[in-house]
Each structure stands twice: as structure tokens, then as C-alpha cells.
Length: 440
Image (cartoon, rainbow, N blue to C red; front, side, top):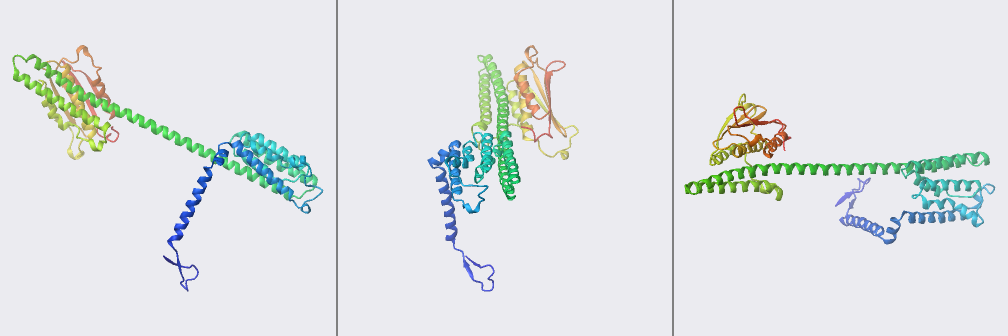
């Protein structure tokens, strides 16, 4: 790859950019990251990182040694001998590094540490001892970065107090005025940096709390969705099992009654029992396959209103005569050309199936039923009536009726069920079609 050196367009001197340079840069960065990771994983580093008091003690020792080195190498000719003097005894040297003694407490007790450091710093200035003010900068920063009210106030109080103390010292000792600006700038800058760090930590904690709350909310939503799905599967299984067993019981009862006198009828009844059992098992597999495998791989067509003819024929073999009428009062195909939503179609079929199963169980011998399906501009209306005796004792609280009502409530529809005037039982349902997106 060639390029022109900028600013030398006249000569058009080519500049070769080799691929090896990029590889070298990548290897360098990778090597530096690897070195950083190895250093962070070193036992000594981990030992200090997991014990803040030990790390701060080491920091205090380093700062104290640095202070001793700086003060010991001061050029006596650069300082005013009448105001500042070099320490010449062990007590004076200990006082010189005094503020460093508070550094090990900067994270354990930041308010106490900055208070002790400020007192020792003021004592240094009163005795005209030299210092670097670095220990106080560390303590002020640590206090204001703590985030709690008391350390933050103590840090700012130390910064302001030492500045005022410097002002008083300048006025009384006629020291250079720039000392006030240096102390004020250094102390306020470290306090502001600490406050900024505390603010960033607070924002990080708030963001982490919001993330945790979002995770909990998502977990609750997942659990709620799981419960809803379990309820839906339970309703599906109830419809399938209740209908299949009702047909099987009726056919078995008929086969038992005609076993001796009508072998052909008995064989027909047993054949119908076998067919009903196989159909119910297949429907149960369709429902359970959504739990055991990927729905995209195990999907099979679910029954809808188009399967009513098979349902009516199955019930006819048990002796229950069902007539189905489909009307569309006031509805024109061009006003709603779309087919029924799949969820509405399945729900309507299950409601009809459960209602007819109840007729089979409670209607008694000779009962007949009618199913009226009316497609309206904004709803699908169902009415299932029978002329049987109804539930024994007027019991209307079975799981079948509750299951149908729950299905309808999912769509925000209307459900009514009860004895019919003149005998029998009636179920009336209205499923809105404009809530298809919210149906589950």
C-alpha cells in the first residue's frame, strides 16, 4: 500500500505502509494488556487489592518517605530562614510527615482521617515546618469521594479551614500572598475531584439498581407469562380430555347395554371408542409438544370452526344430534375481508366443543343441541343451546364453564351461561375481533 507524504505533493514521494506495522501494533497492545492482566493477577497485588487498610498503609508509608526526601533536599537558600526551617530532630521529622499518618484511615474512617490530617497540617504551619501538602490532598479527596454526608462535609471543611488558616498566617507573618492561592487552588481542586468521583459512583450505583430492577421485572414478566401459558395449556388439556372421555364413557355404556343382543352395534361402539381415544391422544400430543420441543418443529394445525363437521359427526355416533347454523346479520364480506384470527378461531371451537361435551354429560338421553355462529363487523357471537335436563342439582360451577369464561376474558369478550327458559341449558359468547393483537 502506498500513500503520499502530506505537504510534499510536488515530489509525490510514496510512503510505504506495511502490513507488518499494523501487526506489530496489535501485538504490542496485546502484550501490554497481557502484562496488565498478569500484574493484576499477581498474589501481592491481589493481597493489597482485597485489603484496603493494608494498601492505604503502604500508600501512607510511600507518601511519608517522599515527604522526607523532598524536605531533606530543600535548598536552604530558597526558603526564608526566619519563617521556615529544616527539621533537625526526630520529633520534628515525625511532625513533618504527621499528615501521612492519617492516610491508612482514609477509607476506614474518612471524616476522622481528614480531621486529624488538618490538625497536624495546621501544627506544621504554626511551627514553620516545611511540608508538601500532598497528604492533605489525598485525605481531602478521599473524604469528599466517600459519598456519605459526614465525610463529604469534613473534606470541604478541611479545604476551607486550611485556606482561611493560610490567609491568617499571611496577614500576621507577612508571607507571600501567592501561598493563599496555591493552598486554595490545591485543596479546592482535590475536593472537587473527590465530589466528582462520588457523583460518578452514585450514578453507577443508581444505574446498577435500575438494571437489577429491570432484571427483576423481566423475571416477574417471564414467570407471569409462564403461568399464563400453563393456564392456557391446562384449559386445552381439559377440553381435549373432557370431551374425549365423555364420548368414550357414552360409547362404553352403550356397548355394555347391547353387548349380548347386538354384537355388530357393540363392535361399532368399540370402534368409535378407539377412534375417539386416538383423536384425543393426538390432540394431547399437539398441546404438549409446545412444552417438550421447539414449537416451530412440532407445530400441527389446531382445530378451528372448520372442524365442526368432524365434531358433530363424532357426537352423532353417541346419539347426540347437533345442528349448526352460520349467520352473518348486518355483515358484508367487503367490510371485513380478513379471515378470523387464529386465536379467536381456536377459542370459538373449544367453547363449542366444551359446551357440547357438557350436553353429552348432563343432557340425558334424547337431548339435542343447536349451535348458532354469527359473524358481526366487530365480533364473533356464539350461542349453544340444548333441550336436555341440564346439570344435576343445577350445578353450574364446573371447571368447564370456568375454563370457557377464562378463555373469553382473555379477549375482553362477554360470556353468559345458565338454564334456558323451557328447559335445557344455553351458553352465549361474544368474542371481539378488534382485540386480536392482545389475545393470547
